[in-house]
Image (cartoon, rainbow, N blue to C red; front, side, top):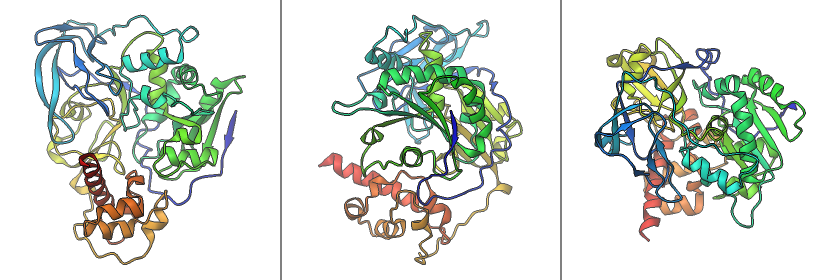
Length: 445
């Protein structure tokens, strides 16, 4: 069933989407780099325990690190080759972290090693969750939260609807769009595993109206299954945020500080769903993902199937980027992504896109002016916070008041307030810093 939904969340913004350069380009396999650089920690939670040592030969898809506790996921070899070094590797945070250097074997076919698959019919919900953890699957929309943890329904709660998030509202990115057009079989297989794992009796696939071709395509796979529905929603940023999508599709509101399960819903990214459908039946682990590589500095824009651990510099050079001419570079999109200052980091499971700009493309507003109390940020905030007031409190380091009286921790850093501010106040950066301080104080007490 396919329906168009005019309901949406309050406020939000409408930035240009810049998706036309890549949305119609089919997914292509990126060539394997001579050396892969794998940070051990690829998700929120504990890093996995190493199962290999320097000098070991590994096969693509081989388990090389096993989960260390519940908040941890497995790690698999992205290529066949030799463990050249185990030590510190650069990360997007600017810190050196534990990692592995794998030298590619030029003689290898790079076929993917699998294991015994997880049978949908005979497996219990817990067995499916264990299989997802052991496949190394995390949220591929950018958060990199362990998927098995997200899917575990707490005691006393129930999931009456599974939402598959195909919104992809971030400008420039078309990864999910291409996955919906090219990996529909995997998506629907993944939905079956997810419905059994969560106990959800029905599924809604949410898609923005600028991806009508994907919505029409997925509709053809529903056939007579009345438990799955595709809903097309109006284009608005940040529609892809879980809380906003739940409001748009279900007219339910996730309470302050709460999770989607408080509304009897579970939200899963569509690319994550496709990986579950691809990996669980075969017993394979995640060793690559689809990434949008775009921006004015990129000559060969597109969506690429990229092995986890591919060095960023190698990826950029492979798509025709002159790295010495890059002015700004984002991992993820320009609204919620992270600005990159080091080209020696590598692609991780949570990397949804790379967007590159030259000096000619960047308009810099270096000067920050005082707040003029215009209210534009208040009108834009999708969760009805008061960014203007929060910004003033951040300036005076009133972090406790920001958290207790003005719900700072509800901010998910979408960047809408910074986008509309005529004074160029970097509000989201203020809030990100303030949240870190609040959380650090809580952990100390």
